[in-house]
Amino acid sequence: MNKKRVSTFFFLLALLGISFVLANLAGGSELKISKALYYLFHPRASGIERDIIWQIRLPRVVLGLLVGAGLASCGVVFQGLLRNPLAEPYTLGVSGGAALGLTIGVVLAASGFYLPLFSIAGALISIFTVYVIASKRQFSNPALILGGVILSFLFSSFVFLIFSISRSEDVHGILLWLIGDLSSTETQLIKIIPFFILPGIASLLIFSRDLNILTLGEEKAMHLGVNSKQIKKILFVIASLITGACVAVSGIIGFVGLLIPHFMRRFIGVDHRFLLPASCIAGASFLVLCDALARIIIQPLELPVGVITGVFGGIFFLGFLLKSKRWEIF
Image 1 (cartoon, rainbow, N blue to C red):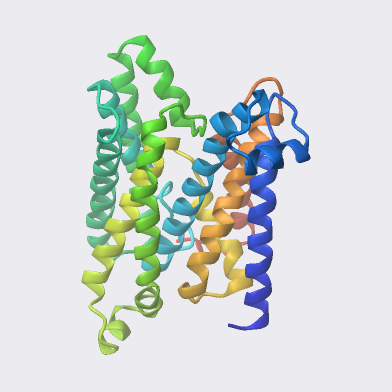
Image 2 (cartoon, one colour):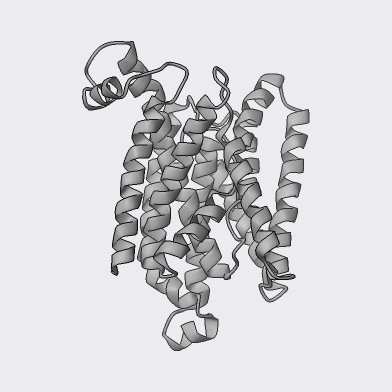
């Protein structure tokens, strides 16, 4: 590992620590850094500040770390597999499919362990559909991006159809969640999700060398002894599982998987053995900081974190479009 990569990883780890502390300080109730750090390291202490840290802010921060790392890693994998700079769970319609699956689960009164299963099933159906559509067009960029966008609109239409025939109390909760929100009160669900996301990320890291080879093209991968079709299917399934789990607890948070891999490639390079872990750390820090900003930007009200990531993502898309040559994105 060269010096630039080493220094980048040290910076990312420092940023992760700073983000963790700042996010535990952000909120309606002001806490001094000394008190926040004291209660973080003394969980058995008593007091209102301790309850704010351990029952409200810390679970939210941990959730943000997991979801940010998961979405960023999926973005790296989708962009590497499809060799497409705009591929990520949001633009490929995977998040939309997961949202539809979970919406159906909520309406059917599913809870606990079953909610992530509905979300994951929706994500898998979505990525399978995009894969089939793209295969009919030789995996061209227009087929991938347009297929994902079309599916996103289609799934959104089905979600709103379910809204129109559901009870008002169900609609209100699902609507806030669809925007992208980390203030989940489902403690049982938060305890389950790490068992989906963390093993999924670890599995992607195991396949990082194969992903490097796949980015060279299927023909070269075959000559190097890599079964490209099988590896692609495995990685698509793993990334969809992670996306479904993330959507189950946080809703549709867009652009994390698009922004983070692009920035990390500038500092880490294209080697997925280093790009994947770097993107995981950066994605976790980015989402936690965005959520902290969402909590304080219009105090005493809170914005859904999906609004903040959407603003950053929209600006990035616009800049990418203006800097790209004609039709380069396709």
